[in-house]
Length: 182
Image (cartoon, rainbow, N blue to C red; front, top):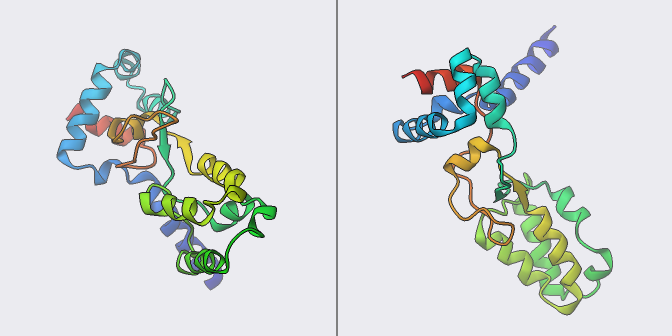
């Protein structure tokens, strides 16, 4: 019984941030989101029908056109899976040590939205023997933003120049209703 409560408490703590997007919006962000929703032609039908969950699904879908962003977290196992093993042989002992150090100090993963983290991996694999690893990591570091994320992201959002997230995640229908009707 105590284990069940412990597991439920842990799950609650892990899932709590997923629905908390609108509660953490600043007044300026709420105004920006409201203006975006009201200006979007495809939002009107959802609003007039009171279909806030449908509107939330629309804002949780990938942005159209595609809007590329830097990921804010990549697990170390994913990084490892994208390092070309034959290119590890070309690393100097200094770069191998640097790679081990970053792994030790980043147990939760790498945040490629930070310029210095991307530069670190480009530097470690800077030789001719790191071309394939650099290319694979560059692909790994990026993803497409949702419509909600795009509203607040900064940057061009092109594949060549991804944007940086200001807010990450989705928004619930109830939170959208609160933003739009206030």
